[in-house]
Image (cartoon, rainbow, N blue to C red):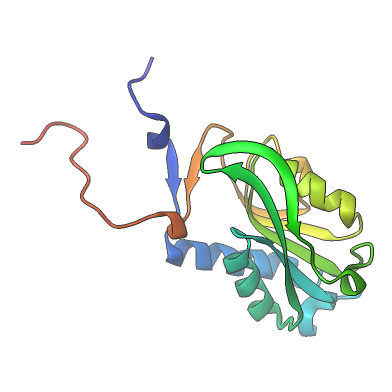
Length: 173
């Protein structure tokens, strides 16, 4: 048995690491779009849709790297602080642009349980779903991701963190 607190099994992501991982996601998505070929402008994607709020930074980086100018958001609330709740859509992207999702790249920071992506996938079944990080329970909901972490790991994103002193792990000598 361990005396660690739940937050101590954490994966701390800096802005620099998030930027590198989101660029790696863009490289993996290059040419994967419905009509895309590697190196073509946008890789065949018609638009990027960020799942707010966590997907906004990675979606912006992916859109920049793939030179995709149409960017929209879908706002889904599935957490209340650190507690998962029922996923609900608070704001939809442009309906005419979205259609059934064909040619649309939906980006989020993380797939955890998969509930958020499951809800969005029902709305846009032909969209391509990409996340920077994936946990095993939700991995089947994502088409492309960069890094898998264990289900019991909490990811600390840079927008949730502040610099502060942390005492040594062993003693104070």
